[in-house]
Image (tube, rainbow, N blue to C red; front, side, top):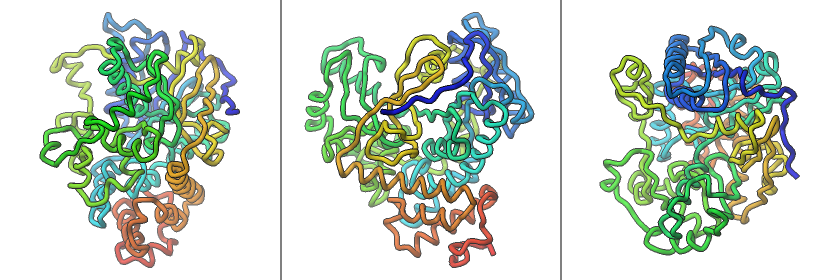
Length: 485
């Protein structure tokens, strides 16, 4: 039986203190500000960011949103200059940070490509995802220590990728933390299933909230073996779609040329469902990095499945509103250069927070340490399942196990994650390379090539890897791709 995590301090819905770490966010913070303005909660948000001016900008935006007549909740925003100031006495902590993509993501995508690894996203697994974890995990160990000192009973919501690595690091450093890793990929699957219910079962008003799934796995590699809409079993409909035209389409690069990098044609999903009998519950662009058959053969083979690679040029522009469709230009809204309409983000932070504060019960997917909710994966590894959220508690729902082939895939990725997390505790770069070497993308290379890839990635991002022992690394010393002595 999976056990709940509980806080010793109740959340007062009329007096909530939120600490936002990464408060200069160009995407999540503006979304959260709008969601809070329409919520049943009131309080204050302290925004902390290494780039203080960015946090001040979002504080101005938050207070500007609150001045609007359609903002029904009562929130105030301030930017703090220290992490301790933001965290002290917080009821809720939001973690959402990212290093400069032009100095990190670009290498995560371009360097592996030169070694024949054509990753689609390179954000949560594979050589790029592991490097992102190695940059991020040491910082989040520091965050966990700070939370244990300044707000030990706070509820912590982690949005930072790679979610499974980062959430695991929080618990590894501070086992008493009440941290939830959140991701919207399963929510997107439920949206899609609601559309199928509307289109094929005559449920004209079906929405995501009408769809229930038994979900289990690790972040971005989750699986569903039960799906219902308003109590109606969706499995027969999904099997028909899988075996028909919907589930058997092919694409070319030309077909995808004008599509967003977020296009999701579900052809990888259908193929995995066809082969293993359970339905993946993440976007195809993420699935291909865990189920690595689909990235063999480069661009043409990836495009064949309807997946478009997120290129380094796209990542490099991520912080510039004029160049990125993911980056919110709050200054333009406040200056009146762009029309502003208060909208909801479709994220579930507010729903969870309201339930924790005592407003009913809410069920959604979360990432938590495994305490029995997934039978086939090791305890303490961070897994993603549904959980029941109620006043002061989150209880993961037992979801069972997997068919043997899927279990084998998942266990391999869990071993990679756990190996890197353990290495991070001591900054042991050679131990981290062992996790890198067993990654399912990296295993397509000869060991010497894997070493050179690892060394080149480390060399390109050394200023972000100060917590790791680079000079004492045997792996780097053996490599010709690294200039570190």
